[in-house]
Amino acid sequence: MPGASKFYRSSGAQARLQQTLTLAENSTLEWLPQDAIFFPGANAALSTAFHLAASSTLLAWDLLCLGRPVIGEAFSHGALANRLEVWVDGSPLLIERLSLADGQLACVAQQPWVGTMLFYPANETLLEGVREKLTPLANYAGATLTDCLLTVRFLSDDNLLCQRAMRDIWQFMRPHLTGKSPVLPRIWLT
Image (cartoon, rainbow, N blue to C red; front, side, top):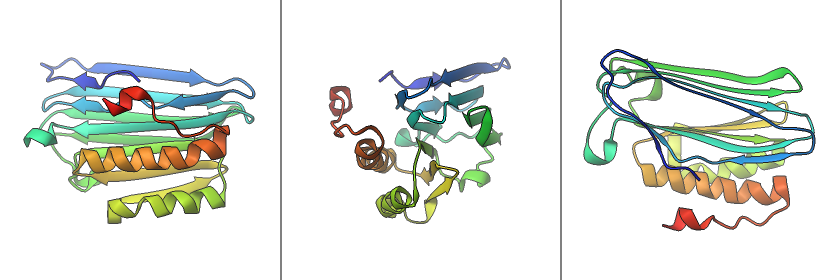
């Protein structure tokens, strides 16, 4: 698991991170990076696209930290454009954009932690199991199932709550999608 991505204050130039992950037939990807931290004054554009074959399996998450809330520093100014896509056999299942500017965080309910989890292929039974695990996040979380793509979204002001919820959901989903036990990577325990 790589370290957190950090986007520092910019004097004007936009920092860009573009990731395209392509899964072949019958392949599995567990994409579980640490959070991306956006310091006040950052000017960043992120784009992550997953291109799946219908027979492939995806377990992925994306966690954005706006400002440095642990030390009371808000994302009071700066800009963020985040794009997340999932394609299966060339057809889009999810194209999601988040645009933030000048500390205007109303679209994320003023919450500094913004998380998304993606699971493919999924079904109604898995959707219900995931929804049960979202209870600690109260009104700031939800899960949807669209054409076998299970998307989990949440907002929070508590990074430990986010990380715990993400871990719990991953531990629930991993055996169902991969047939493997949900053993935590050692680096998560450090």
